[in-house]
Each structure stands twice: as C-alpha cells, then as structure tokens.
View 1: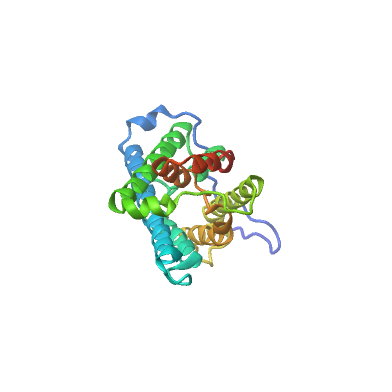
View 2 (view 1 turned 120 degrees about the horizontal axis):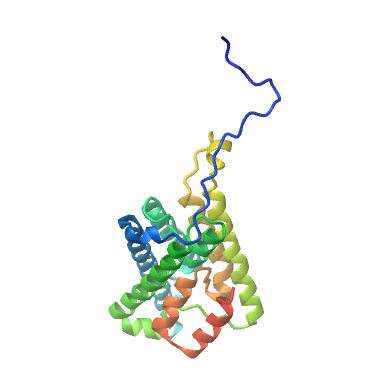
Length: 252
C-alpha cells in the first residue's frame, strides 16, 4: 500500500480547527471553580492595571507641575505613560491568559461575546469583575496619595481643550477598534497553522497596540479604549466634567 500524497498545486484538507461557538447562556459555568477563578483573575488584573497606570499619570503630572517650578521636560512624558499602559497589558495578559483569557477590558470581552467566544453569563460577570477591579485599583491610588490624587485629576479621562466631543468620540472608537482587532488577530486559531514558522506571543502585539493607541490619543482624551479604566477613574474622582465626557466616550 502506498500513502496518498496530494499533487503539487492542489489544496490539502483544512489544517486548522475553529473552536465550537460558546453557548449563548451556559448555567453550568456557575457550578465550576474555574469560572470563579477566572473572575478573580480579571478582578486582580484590572486592579493592578489601574493602580500602576494611574500612579504613573499622577507621578508624571507632579514632576512637571509648573506651579512647583518643575522641569516641563521632566518625568516620564507621554511616551512613558504609553509604555506603562502597554507594558502592563502585556504583563497582565501574559499572566492571566491561561486562567481567564486575559481580557482586562469590557470592550474586548464584549467583542469576544459577539464572536461567540464566551457565553453571555461569562461576558457579563467578566465586565462586572473588571469594573470593580478598576474602581478598587484607583481607590488604592487615592488612599495612598490622596493629596496628589486630588491635585492632579485622579488620572481620569477628560477631553483636552481645543477638541470637540465628536473628535474625542472618534478617537476612542478608532483606538478601541485597533485594540480589539489586534486581540482577534493575535488569538486567531488559524495563525498557528498558517504561520507555524513564525512563533507569535499573543500578549506582545496586544500590549504594543495599547502603547501605540495611547501615543496617538493621550493628547486628545487621555486615552480610554477601556470602559473599566475610564469608569474606575471617574467613580473615584467623581467630578462633573469627567462624568460628562464619559457619557460621550463610552457611548460606543
């Protein structure tokens, strides 16, 4: 007997397998420890993300405050802030990908739900855990640095002077699309078959996408692209302008 070998130029059978779509509602998840472990992972990851990044923003503002005769070119700058956000996403996605999938962002979770990658119950509970984690993370920043927190805006997103709300909303829509598109591309099951000669570490392009979007949109909105990040900072800082801007930025 001889082994059948496809002729040169012919197409072989499908060399990858798409995972089956997640059920819309899966009550069985509520009985599994892995589900609650994933919720804890999302909560802790979002808490750490907000704690580190908001501290970076406040630290930058405090080291460049003209009222303190500080060097306006001192501190980490916009580049450093962008690295803080992108680097933390890289680290946290890497740490939690095997536990919860490493979403750390309600926009990512919602996109994966629409693609039937997660069930409605899991998507909803992930978003709750992410928002609670964000609120707690910013709350820790305020608890440890209350005077600086209140003086420098609490790391909350707000529209910069010279831009209208339509521009801010457009920047957030495009930035969020870049991030979610990168997540889908980096986790595409076809990639391991199509690009098997090119090892891809999914958290790296995801973190780099966050970095690039922050470079582009920090001067406009402070960069949201993560409803939990924006909500957590707004809840703890709790100023009227911040809430007014959140209504527009998070209306997507």
